[in-house]
Length: 159
Image 1 (cartoon, one colour):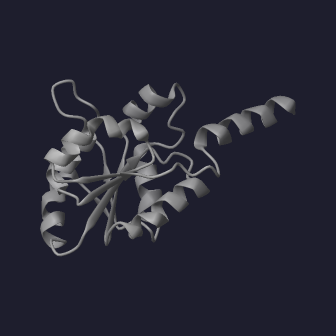
Image 2: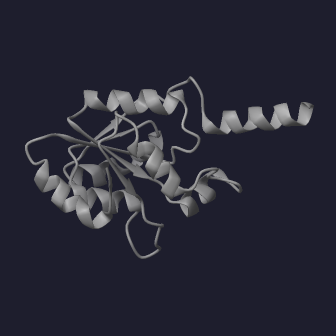
């Protein structure tokens, strides 16, 4: 189910006796590595919530032409997966507000945040302060959206 930021507090109340697992990312050009990551989230809790990076933030981090699929469509794709219970679209970053992920954490109060991005480890204090366990998992080495895009470009150029 796709939910709004304004619905996160009520989701926490609805699931108060269950363990909520939050993960986040772009999830552009969904591939097997994404699926494996999402399926493993059940090992950490009962309710899986995916926060999807905004198009603007994805462009800043990944470069021009990204994301390939816009956030609205990525949310609908995520929502169709049985490994995912809820999808929330991250707001655009704002210079005077906390990172979108921490805004979501403040509203949702998940039990666990699972990521393959080691950069989150520098924020371990913020997670602890929020009462959220940070779990960093190894990145799946089966594929990446960037590799897929490069392969398509190489294939197109050779034809």
